[in-house]
View 1 (tube, helix red, strand yellow):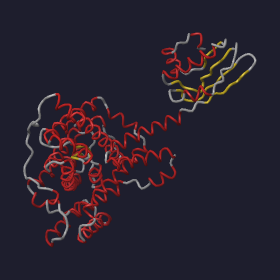
View 2 (cartoon, rainbow, N blue to C red):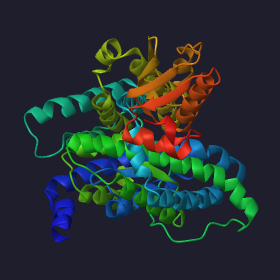
View 3 (cartoon, rainbow, N blue to C red):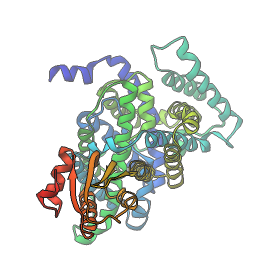
View 4 (cartoon, helix red, strand yellow):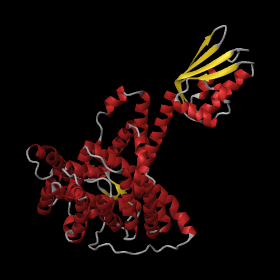
Length: 483
């Protein structure tokens, strides 16, 4: 236990502390922007980012991953806030947390293995494009000074690490360029332009909503959507961070941790949230590997708001936009263009449809779920081909089956069988086939019945162990049919 604590909290503390500082600065405009999207006070998003980051650093399953208020959740709750107010949003956040805890207990993390690589590539690329598109309003059509700051930021981010790596380049860009702005001034947008920041800590309170079934029916659909979207984004981000750091994380623990964080946040005036791939990438690229970086991001975020709020509001937005542009470029899988050209057309289609749906709906969960459904359909189609060969002699007829026999392959299989055989022994050879479900067993029963109606004697042979077991359990046939 002590070794695990040291590994997850105390490994390379200086690097993780500095990475957390960079992330905290990047969280402020994001949290404010997401609050505006949801139609609530900016402090609702800032409190959420502080609380979720701190709590998830302790109870989450993926060290170095950043969770906070997110745009995906903000977009879902717009109608709820508009029609019922912020207290209903907080109540929905609490219920969202309960649902996620239950899903974690039910080990929903195991479902990650059913998400194919093509969907992962689509998810990552769509997210990279969304991150980039979110920065456009802070870069284009503002002023010539904005372009200068963006270019200067990108130069620092890409050139400085070649010569100096002890301090994260994003932190240097933030400090140096913000200092230049405060000294010389420029015609650029700042963090303060996004909304007012109150220099106060969150306090505990129970959302002011009626404790009735009507209230539950109002918030339940939103809570379920928030819980699912939050977990999909969180678990996919955890998988990306796993790959980036060559480590493994507990997806079920992360699911429970996300639920605990959202449950507590709702009682302290914060909106729901989940993992953030952009900030997680910033964190990892800054050298973070431990929970300390996530904890630091949350604590420093609140410190910046309460103690240094007057300075934070002066951070030029083009600096933060430049950092996020770097994140989007680094997040996008540039091998995707080769992938589309060389991968099977079905995989390429799944990747593209995932990207298109995410961008069209601004909902990562919808894109991923539809992508998985298409992958499953294409996979079922690929393996649903069953070959049937006929050997007809004077004394007997042998039908040999080869392939995976299940509900999707039955029609193809039966259509190949010629039932015009009379008064002969008929052998059904399954040595190269596997029966998977009750539909497969029912199909075998049907084949036997059709042959027996014409006076044939039918024998089933060479079933493998699992196929024989399911036939014995579900089939209407007699033991004499099995050889």
